Length: 195
Image (cartoon, rainbow, N blue to C red):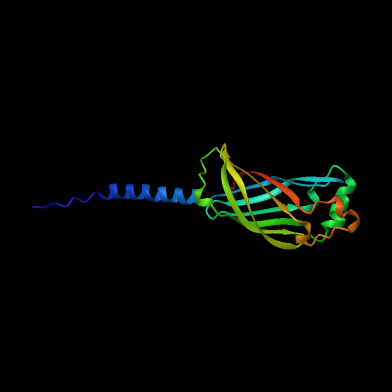
């Protein structure tokens, strides 16, 4: 004789609740977004005649852990130079920041599935997307590093761009003072986004 043992209704409901709770918890973790409004971007140009560099401490960034989608934006006028005249020329003559007030990047961390978001050691990331400067869009691909400290995501990347690729005209009289490629460094500390 065979017996079929059926768990009581309370036992079944309790286990179902636990399973659903775990699934909901996992989906919340994977859907979580991180952001900052205080990212750091630095650019640098060096020639035998002139060194040009500027900082911006108000870089906005949003990262979606589920998809790897990442967006960055910086107001051009927030870049600070040591010399006021250089800052004025940068905004008025080269970047035309009144006409093109923002520089932005929209793309993806393509290896997001391989990132351990509990890891405190630096992990390599691959980044691809579209960089928009001076109203011109170009595809870029670069590498960076990402690590976790106290529940916050720390990330760095660096790459070079050519001003002429973004329609930025360099007058002949100062062409030898500005490098053909500008080096850009980005540093981010991202925290969980709470609605």
